[in-house]
Length: 429
Image (cartoon, rainbow, N blue to C red):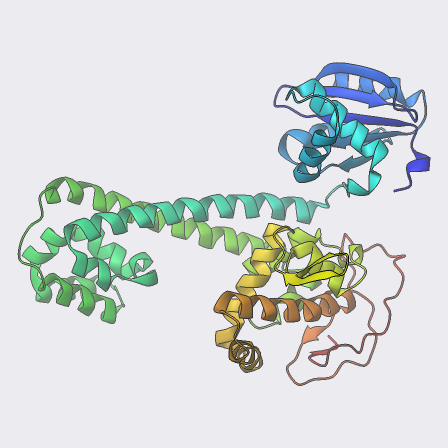
């Protein structure tokens, strides 16, 4: 985006029912300072009025949800669009006079920052249908995952209060299994399981197709370890079946969302590219695609992508005093978490990743630091794979340039990528 192409900077502090609009010209003089309803007609009138002065740049602080309509209207009218990240906006607000926090001041901060410091802005191009749908599904999945974690923790809390041995028997993901949930829904808790006895528990599991024999045996053995009944057991056992049913529902919902994501990206070549790498499944691949906006060309090299994710170390230096490097605290949290999780999983799945992790541990790094080093190394591979449309192959070589796969976010006239021989573990599709 070239600042010289813009004639009017329109900052919108977006809200649920209305926005506050502040428009500035090249000299920073106020052209417009007024509330605007969350209404297409009024937004069109406001932008059309400003377009008489030339090219308008519409800047918002929230490009999704409540900011979607003004951005869509602005693009439809031929105006330019961008958004100012919240962190940059808060820091910029400290540089301007006054300490109040009002919609009017926030709109001025947005417009003034876009005018004076255009490098703080982020592109706000429209999503294609696939990325937009993926963003909605991903948000729904994150909310469901948080709700599932809360529900599992509530159930664990009840079991720990009533029967610690039973809670230990259902450690880890066992508590979310069909076998554990089926037994808790039917017998309602430790008291019901104790009255039934080990033989009837095993027979019920067999007749109802609960295939986790190890879990059934662990539950049966745990029940025998406690003979006393803790006060409050009756009330708790009225809640346990409900919690078990909620866990099953939330778990199945996440499975259904994952299926929708796979169907949505079934014809997306970049999904095939990402999932060819050990440790990356469809759900994590979708997080990576969302974080980069589906277009790797936004990043000039792998170091740029790593810095954007916040997994590149930050140098601390002042004059002749060099304090070394420290872990980055910023970056795109979605991408950072996805890269960290894929590295963590790859330690168990990929011998080469495990060897690299062990080498970093031998150098004295703690677990998280070693996993982050592996994530940074894998970031180089992911960048090359996405840029060239190549699959991951351990021990392979990559000496041929390939044209990136055509997607909605890769225009037909995109330039051919440079030849890449920087990583030996990818091969042509």
